[in-house]
Image 1: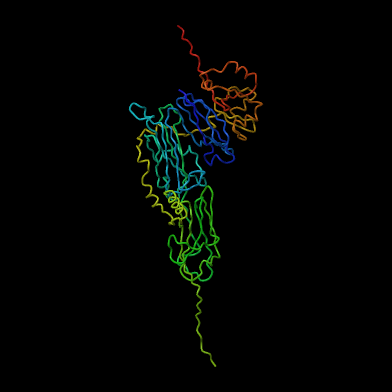
Image 2: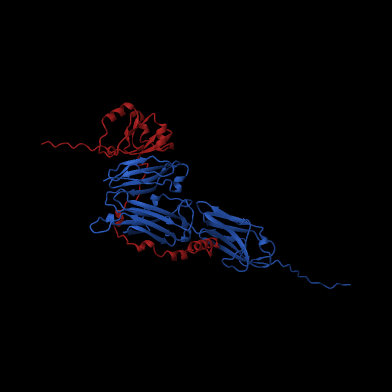
Length: 338
Length: 168
């Protein structure tokens, strides 16, 4: 039996394929006959496959080739068949960024899967009764912010499980599962894949994939003053060192009277603000000077380094100083000899 | 009346100042991820991984034939090149040098030495022979012949050999 396939393939699903210097190819590999068809594609968009779907289905592969390095990357692949289960995956994070799902290493995210076409009963082949879901993860190489999906999915999964019922369900992951010594600096991708179970005749078994980009938690320090330091005249110049600021964030220094207290609103120090809206974390060193106006009176003040992200405000560092500008004249009036 | 109240509540939460926290520690993250949500589902046993095929070691370039005109190159599936005259042998299976073009772009600029032969899926699968008149025509064209189906290059499997009747 044959069925006509109508499959929408979304191209350029990853940043890797979106830029200049890449050419995309879609291959359809018929599982019954092994025939390979190269679908004529436009750089971006959706297309329905006009080919007849054979009984064992077809494997669709989205490839891109990097011009400069003549290197090919398998961006995505999906097995579709009239007698195969079907599946979809969606990842939701607290960051509204739309190009790829991304989140921070400490933040939760959800994976929603939808499986259809599974059969129940006795005497049914195992492949028709369940699918295998796998969770893979891999850190980026230094300086990189992308990974070929095939590289991540080829390794040993972090965890896996069978799904044996049709329908939609959501799994909540409380934080990153990337294996790094310090999970606050985890930076990589977590991929989820649902496989059909092969009876030995399928060249690939991937039914659905989705991935989330994991970004590190920012850190930072204020240098130039020490805790408890007395500021008598001009406030000393500060050096703010920032590491791994979230790609969509606003970072600043604020000052308020008194001891450190979370959720206190202070006065922003001009020249300390940094606004980011980009696709990768950012590190920087910001010199700050001429901020005496934030200390209107003598007393105890707290200087805080704050960063606002889609997940809230994080205090990265704080220092308490004493401002004492009283002019004391210590003199001794001697007697006048006449 | 619920809807307006819900909208007001959402609006209030949207404008509320976000909570400020100190930077999270590695220990706090570790405490959050003591178990995986997948552990709540039936677990595979040893050997179940063998029932899935992972996309390791695949290469589009290696699974294809490279066509190169000296300036541009493109890819077609292995088996899509039906005929190569000796004159153009160095343009088929060549090295991927120059500017990579999509198949459609490459064909547009190289029609002087490329010819496309539309084949059916049955012919591509080797279930139906290509009429003998076609290879004869290709020989006279003096061009490299690429099999296409609906405009896209397609691999053509050799037609299965006709079984020879055993002599009695």
